[in-house]
Image (cartoon, rainbow, N blue to C red):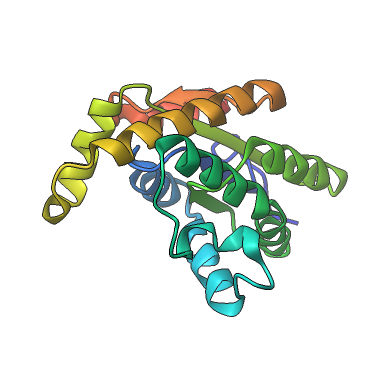
Length: 200
């Protein structure tokens, strides 16, 4: 059983939120502070998509279909459906990380508050601690600016940013129903401190 300290009040920390909010950077800074292992859930998603097909696991392949382009409403619906299809995969990752004594941070776009609540409930039954926090940004223009800084070769991504903001709003609403805290991602420079305060 790991030695628990007030400095690391979790065995596994889940950081969710829409794309373009700085989850990876925040996770890296917190991991360095706590000596934690970092899991990028996008890597798990890519592995699952590589090991399955749209015929056998349609929920994992919404955005690989030839007709994936569509209205912002359709893209949002597919993003939510994909996230829900990955709930069991997230639980599998958390269960595996709880078999070792090194704290871990799992971050990604497709973490849902419902899956986070299930993971926390399972962990508590083992006297382990899974905590979750969801980042939020309600201004699509700020998300678009983040994309421009991160992916300058892609040009303006205003539509993607608009969908990201709406998906983030859905996650925030879901978090309200399942109790994980929702943290504004600005100011970015002090985001790790805001996350630590929310989890204290």
